[in-house]
Image (cartoon, rainbow, N blue to C red):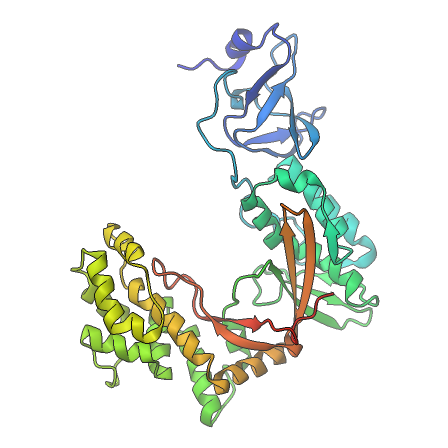
Length: 436
């Protein structure tokens, strides 16, 4: 049995001065003086120096360096690795931040209206009170917030001490709070408050910025390029409206995607549009495309169930489908899916079918014009934040819905084709992009 507690301290630490070791697992960080006050976390495998004491302390004082700065806190003694043992885990690019911990809801400001003059102090207090972020991350969040008063910024080396996975989470989640500060200071000097919806994941709108008279602007926050939004909020604006002619065709197309599951929506939307992929796949699996009843994802699954050779299957699919729709799945990827026990195989066909469908739909101006009109009617401002650790830069780009064109978008792979339904995205062109 491993030695722990006082016995371990007497064996490895007593009378030996400051000792270098690592943290065995992610652990709570406590205030150096108020030892019961949790101030954040220390990630697993962090190299630390345990400060010498004359008596055993169940929460010893430690120091560690990151981002060119020395941090001090206390952690539980039994979360320290035995001195001299090296970690078997690669600590590079680890994810230390819980999902949603740095969103407005996660930091306790969801549902609140914050005046401009109180914004920095309110969000800073929320960062300070966060008990789920490592101390260096909390330090960077304050820098991120402060520098968001401008559009283009140079960051301190602290950013390089944070893993890429955590940077992505920070940009996506805390980017809503930092971006709101950018908006208050760069969009219009008359803006006086920010309001975060009480319900997280409110479709398209991440927060509102408003004027003294109560008029509010809708803002969608995006990190880097941002994921394609779902069509649901578009559908909500039109589901009860009556359309005729070609508009009715597009209305039904969007309804088909929104109101069916991820797999079947690909097939049914392809059938409704009359896509080439729908016909070719139907012919291949023996389900004629001209019948009123659409084939299903299970029909595709049944057709694929006996295949074991990825190269042979690729050759057959390439001849009959892939080469005709200019979309494919590599033979190696097909083999990987075939080898995985219990894996659904239909994505080998459904993923390229969905990509091909979006290719065809986006060539039809009836569909893209209808989508663009619907998006413009929502009048949302989309703010993109880009953090680049290597160049230590922070930049904002604003794209307004009312000034842009939109197209349909799909971004799920063959292993999980229904993970993200067909959505939409803003078409970034030189005449549509507004960089401040």
